[in-house]
Picture 1 (cartoon, rainbow, N blue to C red):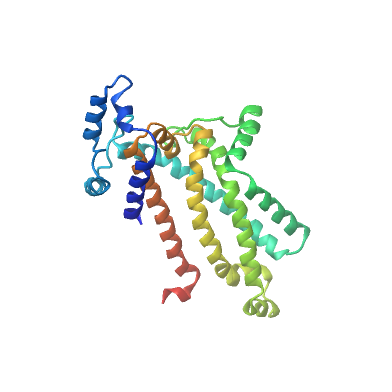
Picture 2 (cartoon, rainbow, N blue to C red):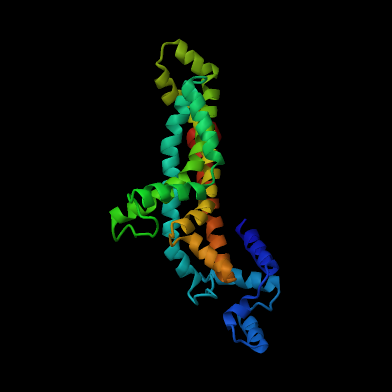
Length: 299
């Protein structure tokens, strides 16, 4: 998948308007200067030559040099990656902590007013774009109340309290959409499991309903929820780009925007490659977790 993705990025970058060589050469560069820059950057090479050359550089741990900052791409990504990873992790953690209990309660109280309210709120939350939620949170809790900073980032190692304040609003803005989807999926999965014969038998035997859900139904209901969680992790990672711009966080989103604006092809390739690798890793973790929740898959 990563090999195909790298080739796709190279093909797409060839189709984008603008000449990175002209940007690197400067505003006062002559046609000859631009052509020499293109040759130096290897932009005159064929797609296949650039593809093979890039793979060879990756094998040596070299992701290239930024055309905009003249900084090693790997160094820039390593500096920005912790911000995006923390944001993604916190958003998914908040989504799980909120969605799973609400989804289970909605399933247990199926058809009640609580169930209808949760279903309606989750449907509305899914329709709200993360950037709108982010702007609303900034307005209410940063501008009007001054409880949290409106933007900026403080490293965890420098000031844990400042770090917590700087990531709270972005994480909440990112968590709304996955939480809404996980509520619906959790409710549906638990409702389905509660209708199974073995659950009905356990309840008829006098085992308390909460024990049946926690001990017998929980793992079976978790399989579809974990699947959706993996999909939501990829969406959250992509949505972090917009949220980082709203809250001026120095993550991969900010680096990606600058790379696109300045046609910084090496940086774009590096960010896409790292993002894809993270998503593939998340999918691998989800697939591996199935054997824990469903013992039948271990064979």
